[in-house]
Amino acid sequence: MADPNSRPSNAVPPSLKRVAFHAVAAGLTPLIPVPFLDDYALRQVREQAVRDQLKEKGLKAPDTAVAVLAGSHEARSLGGRLVSYLKAVALFPVRKVFRKVFFVLWVKDCVDLTSATLHHGYLLHHALERGDLDDASLQGDAPRKVQDAIIAACKEVDPRPINQALRRIFRSSRLLMAEATRALFDPKRGPRVPDREGDSAEVQSLTDRLLKELWEERGYFTALEGHYVRHLQGDPQKTGEKTGGKTGT
Image 1 (tube, rainbow, N blue to C red):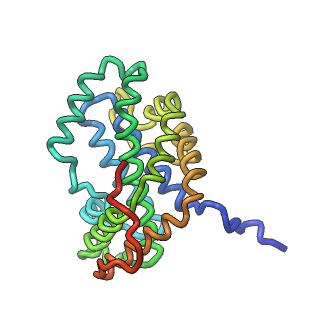
Image 2 (tube, rainbow, N blue to C red):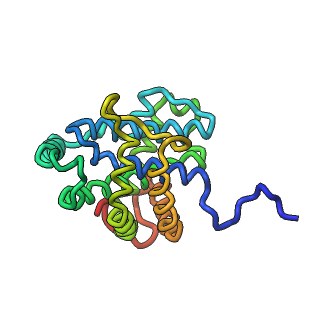
Image 3 (cartoon, helix red, strand yellow):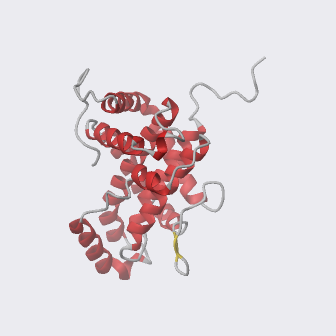
């Protein structure tokens, strides 16, 4: 008799649902209608994503290790922040009504951030499954080594199939995205990290759409794992065909 608690072999692991949820939340941060608070919210979401994955494994990292693994030290360039600010100021009057012109201009930012956070979260999940991080190593330089290997692995893949799926999801979910952004920004209290189990039904809905698309790309993520392992082991030489350029659109 089958175990009623067993998970079908083709079912998405709950841990990856968590990765996808935080990826969607990160991708929505450009829609926060206050300049510079979007960067702050993005940092908060990414750091919470790291803490949640570590907590799942019974690990608690110092804040410095969390910041390294979340890429908090790799702030957006001055030029990138300036462009974001100018776009925010120019479009602030229309953000409240989420007009079409605003949506079109921001969808690339949403796709880029969701994709980057998804790739990073997936590889951090893989690193924890492999045992590359534990309580002792989190106190040392292991977080930096893991983060460097993740970044290097992402530069070696061609994310266009993933980004195209994200673009389809976001373009067909304009109103849902507008509602989901409310989970990230309270006008009275400012940015916040959405609760996967609580008040973020819209974010969860977008997450479900993302998982449905991406679970068909398991081979892509298996290849991504291989790139990560080689870089972590200090062997950047390719063992097969390189699968493309850096993460982006």
